Image 1 (cartoon, rainbow, N blue to C red):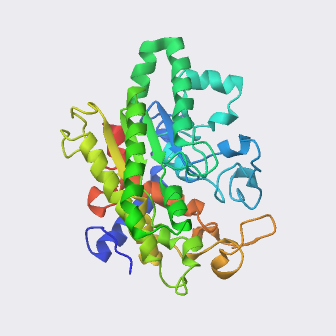
Image 2 (cartoon, helix red, strand yellow; image 1 turned 90 degrees about the vertical axis):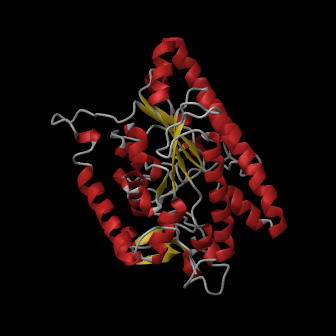
Length: 387
């Protein structure tokens, strides 16, 4: 049985999801990006800087030596049906968060920057995306751009910004949104190695130690607004469900418990780093003064989608849209794979990643939903960027 730590009755939660959907569908018309009748962009933050794994990677992995670029049907619902390096049928969470703060386009992949684009980034335009599919909080996770390296890339960006206008750069960075979505791959790796329950505390300690270091480094580089996405209920993804004889009907609770435990520890870590801050999330603590944060609960959002698919607008929350075999999760989403006709009614695109529809609804939930829903804490993303 999935335990969803969301306050309120089913009807209340369903109402919230309906309101979130309406706000997103109509809100984009009244969003900062469309606030001007002339179509001029108006932003809640000057720039967005993105770090993490495949949930927010917009194409960096395509530029890594030895990495083969994702092919169709990845990107089939992206404009012009072209694969972009996103692990999705279309846009991902980073894209929708960028739109919600007023940008027409998501910050570009750092490794894709041309000289002209670099010049714009160094002047603080839009931000940049350093995320890399397969990365983890631990540097030993995956074979991609580590989170440590991603932050080093950002430090290089900041140095160029300071060389152009140091005062303006510091002000811009302090008001920008730093979006981090990572941790799932560390837990997947732990599960794949058949580690024991007695080793979980050590895993959490290593992850939290690294996360503390990463946050402190970003803070030293000027970050003051952190939008952190926690780990989804990994026991609900098709790749894990397919390992269970009951996978068609329920998630694997032991895997979900691993994610839940880390997420709880992450919240405690962030509260400790801003220990003197108010309940509204303002950072006046001694450790990282001025730091504000919001944790978008991918765990609670996806758990809600899974427990109440109809209310969330999904028909299939167990199997992958693209793949093959049982739950479409036994073979990969390759050019020859079968894929569903209506991607909007599937929670999962491939055996691990959500569909564009999931990313859109999830981003709207962590951005707009009241804190009482459990979809974001201690404030939602809208409150974070509006302060």
